[in-house]
Image (cartoon, rainbow, N blue to C red; front, side, top):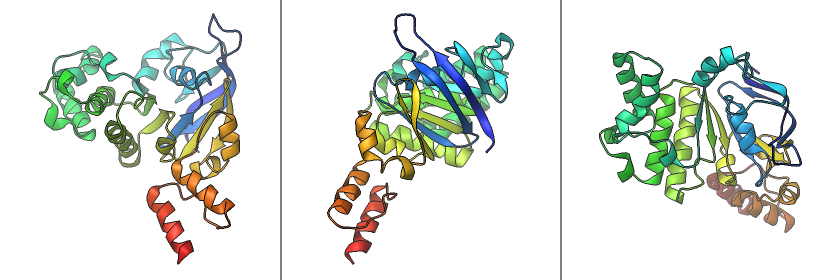
Length: 277
């Protein structure tokens, strides 16, 4: 594995808390992978996300991005160019009155040349399917469209890693599908490493790897096909499983022998159809 991010025994506590938000977390993130991070409220998943581009710094341990240490001030700019963050509320990340001006904001502040800014803005908007809206007012867009503009604003910095902290939490189902399809395509087609913090199991099922956090520690770590069949363990952590997994586990309990790794609706339907045939 070629790790783009290495998290080594990281501990972090908030001043008003009686227990650590992160408690000895150690893991690597492979370059070009799509990683979903799950956990109930207070599990530490958002705190983990904020350590990946030095919004927060470890109290103990270290975070390395391409071997750059987030705790070293001299590395900070290079790290934030490599790791882009997208948060829950796109309205909090939109700063301009025109879509293309908003996407240009970060490169302009980085001192990028105007011709290069134009190239980056157009390219980023095309990558998220929002180029035709480049002259629109952001406040007139839907929630999913706004979030895609926010993602484009990060892509214009040309990061290696895209960290999304519950980006679909405030969106309707259509907006959620738009955003998750966009970030999955960025990973599969563009090779961008995606780390998606989410509480939606169907979103996590599309990842290469699922990390489940509990009380600041990694409780489960594996492929979706390895993690989601552990339904009892997940429920003990106040989490659910994808609807397809739940259906397959129920049918298997009733005597069928379906593959628990059939996570998509299509794969689940095919497995049931084959078993019935």
